[in-house]
Image 1: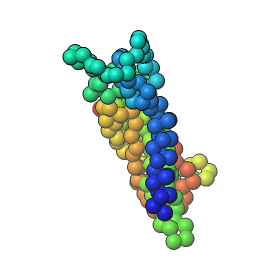
Image 2 (image 1 turned 30 degrees about the vertical axis):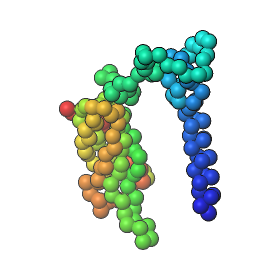
Image 3 (image 1 turned 60 degrees about the horizontal axis):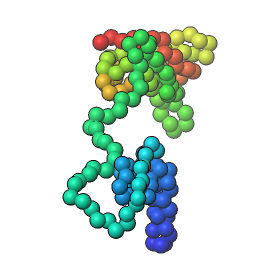
Image 4 (image 1 turned 180 degrees about the horizontal axis):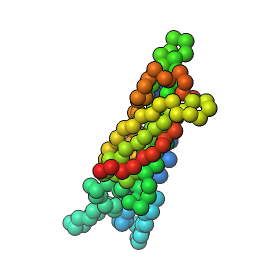
Amino acid sequence: MMLRRVRFGAVLVAVVLALTGFSSKKHGHSSGGGGCSSSKSRTTHHDYDDDDDYSSSSSTGGGSYTDTPTPTPTATASEEPVATVVTCVQKAKGKRRAVTTATVKVVAEGGYEYRVRLVFRSGTGTVVDSGTGTLHVGYSEDSGTLKLPMDSPAKVSRVVRCEVESVERVG
């Protein structure tokens, strides 16, 4: 059993390294760093010398590091916020209790607060109930989720679907 785990671990490491483009073949007098997972690495090789007689000058191996993260795509100021229902409310069924809170995902520009209004509709399309809530989307984010409870949870048995009625930036 232990040998099986070790073998599985070795295969897993090999697969991860292969998928990330890891290469240990870069060494010597090159401008790229060895073991780099970069797919854009250039190496110039002239008169390869394998006896490793290094000079007193120092060199830094390829690549650069920045502590500033690459920003993820976010909604711009000109784009309207978009809210979609992730989960709707559910009436009680068997031993399962009723769920009277819906979950909504808001995709919007980070750094602002958004108000979402959700309506709970019956099978005929009439509004049974509604719920309103606010969500702050962080500066480094482009979305967030919001739990919206029904204003009148006793009406959950009449609800068939949930619809976002409005989403607006409020601050």
